[in-house]
Image (cartoon, rainbow, N blue to C red; front, top):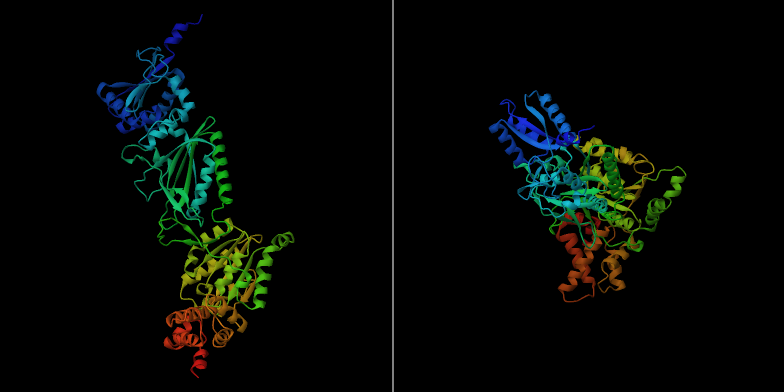
Length: 586
């Protein structure tokens, strides 16, 4: 017959640690903390007891648990060649005479620090509470991140946790925050802000498990307002630790900045789960959902953007600057009708027929060169195109930002259909024979590679502008597939100048005679010149107390300042024709 009493007496085993005066104390401390999951203070007290009394009880456990802990400990001891001795001694259930503070049952040497005091908790309660830890610790306050993690992953050794991380572009911060909020909305979770003592380091899950002087303190949630061109900014977290539970799976999510010298700070998301197939599958599903949410991002889609690194005096973080520009209708574009029709056919109608072109196996990407003298309205024309390409995201790149072309193109691919505008392309894509060194050629090659690297079915338009098209490198301007159509934006003709006088003088009282005089005296000037002329005419009206009524003398006074007082350089800067000086001086 089976001896039930004997089994009851040996159902639990005490694990005893013996002093050998040779094993390093740091190893003993680490063993006690990592294998037996003792808090730092308790591990130090136990190690001190071993040194003073020659041995100390690490804990009393069910025999199966004790044997597993003993095996793990001995493997670590042998791996490093230490003589440390750990033994198992049989014991009955009620050895200490203490009872579980939760259920009142007899409890053996299983102690946990709670709120600064030692609580007695039986193994059965620990396991039961671990399964519902989110509710169990929902109201518990922690000072350090490692304490919260220890509670959340109670019963799971740290070496049985696995982390996976992804880094997303820093300028997509608003969409990453939105995607993360969506992902965590379906889980039972608790959030902690973290104080980062060393801002130059990426905060990781492993770093959050450290204690002592390297412990990360729990702090208030730290938000920054990110401007996305809407009435209200998006509130984005600087960092965060989420302790989550889905069904029986406990996991943690860490949000931080990924910092790498010389590169844009990225958004790092790290997920920690127990090792095993279930955890690995869950992590892959989480990142798949994050990627889908970010790829369908709405924060910047359909807007006019540029990457912004300058100071924002409103105190909002941008990364991406959204340009709030009024829409431009066709009637507001003062260009010859032939030029407007060329724009419509090669851009607006091309985009409208993309699906049919794709169905016929034709490329849906395109490159357009807008060229002409300064001030003729190339930038205004681009605003017209942006206003009339529904659903398109417009990215405006100045010549000095071409070094960021890779980031711009990543945005263009993510937010397509998109229009990529590179202004004054002749500054970085001039003929190789006229370049000053390898840096200029490197920028040119970067541009060519990005244009060539687009797939034929990419919904991306390249719009390049230039004041000096004759200086462009032939590899760019002389090859279809990079630039498919060059469109001249010319100086305004007589009809164009008349429209411009009315457009920029709409707040003034203009007689037909005054308009015709302004038109006749501005032959060969740019649209920018006429815009400045009308402002000076308005100033002249104010100066003589004439209110809104314009007289011929006002035109003469304004032209005198623009053509003669500033000399030939002023004429060039304002976009005027040099022969105006000779005509007006006769």
